[in-house]
Amino acid sequence: MIDDPRPSSRRDNALCESLALVALGQALQPLTTLLSRSIAAHQVYDWLTLLDREVEHIWRSKWSIPKILFIISRYGVFLDMSIFITGESDSVHCRNTGNADCDSADL
Image (cartoon, rainbow, N blue to C red; front, side, top):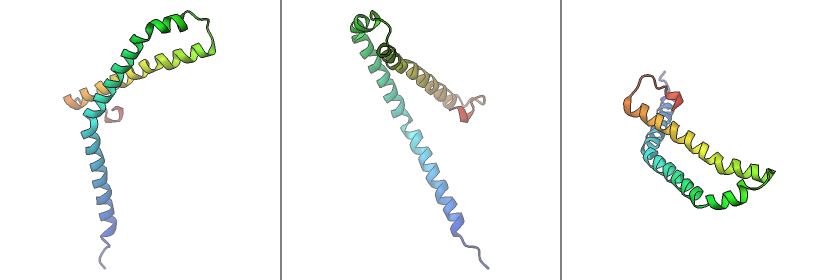
């Protein structure tokens, strides 16, 4: 009796789809890097242009729930961006150097 070729062809199709998604992700990596750095530059520009108003209205006011929420939302972005960009640069370093110490699960 001849085995049915369909299960292996399904596996082959799934493998091809997975490889295509990986290739697409690698092709979009430069665009993702550019966008993330552009967003970071915009955040720094926004912070610098509004710093005088922030000092006047937020820093000199009493501590309150709105002030705490503002500080978390305003400066949490900088923390998030620094973590993202640092992780991104580690990923690029591992990819460019082929370092054996880089674990693909950490990228």
